[in-house]
Image 1: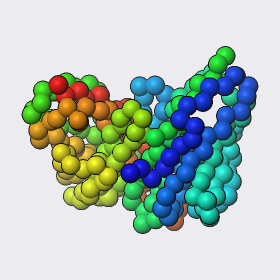
Image 2: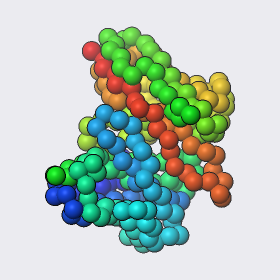
Image 3: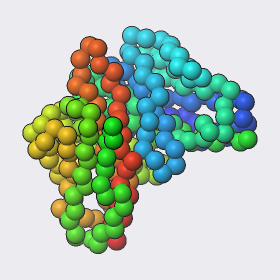
Amino acid sequence: SQQGEEDPQALSIQEGENATMNCSYKTSINNLQWYRQNSGRGLVHLILIRSNEREKHSGRLRVTLDTSKKSSSLLITASRAADTASYFCATGLTGGFKTIFGAGTRLFVKA
Amino acid sequence: NAGVTQTPKFRVLKTGQSMTLLCAQDMNHEYMYWYRQDPGMGLRLIHYSVGEGTTAKGEVPDGYNVSRLKKQNFLLGLESAAPSQTSVYFCASRERLTHATNEKLFFGSGTQLSVL
């Protein structure tokens, strides 16, 4: 079974609104990462948060991590049509070699 | 820099045929990975390698073999393809884990494989 589960599976919003995606995981982690995938393309790394961090920002992205609840959230502020993509959380497992992905959230931003 | 390059981009096989997918990276990364992506399943780890000459099983290794003879290349083989192996295959690489390393993965653009 997969390590991470994203919620919601799909999200449709208007341009300018904020988009929030959540991720839950099962086992101990070193870090949690978020990736973006445009249709038909490979994944691109967005942001990484370490297990001893609680919040991180990068441009319009804000990630939080709650290790007690084994959950993370990705907030995209002031969304744009170009943000339309699938977003995946991925956990770097304790021990250091593997990165395990969730099933992803499909975000659609309407212009 | 090219980053991570996968070949071929598309392939159609008949059940029972064999093939090899090639992944090449030019970033001198120690770690390399093969994932498959199926609708609604996200990415699942097939095999990975933490250095030249080493390989290890991931979440879904059955039906696949891998080799890492050179640091820059990671090959994924299907000895006898099955329709259940129809998927999009992604290769990824990253730096060796150290306290100063950012553990982000760099992905190739994928291989669409159909097994009839």
